[in-house]
Length: 172
Image (cartoon, rainbow, N blue to C red):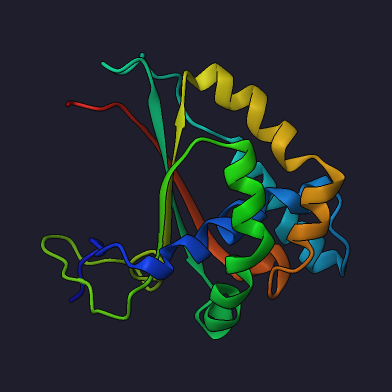
């Protein structure tokens, strides 16, 4: 078995852009009906944040995003993510960090994972509140600049096999 924990790597910076790419599809991505449907599902997943969380001890909530990006397109994705994806997202969001698969096998204890296995892209955004996130994220992903950047995602929104988002608060 493999473990879902990852050691952050310097290349991890490349992953963030693609992580947010999911939401751009609903902001104007083009393609086949199948890819448009997948892109719309991806956008909905980005916008859906789950239950409203209480403010963390530092007054913030942390959105932890885990993506299962298509392994057949992963290397291509990692290359493209290092460009405008990361620049744009860092300019518009309070990114705590982002990481991509290191190639080191994961270690898993307890219940077995499903066929997708562990996420291969993880990133964290700091928000003042869930309300701020729900207001700001669609604005950031709704710009013409972001739609242009998202158009470079290898395989479009359909390449995101699963998107997981959790809202956490800090204990330290």
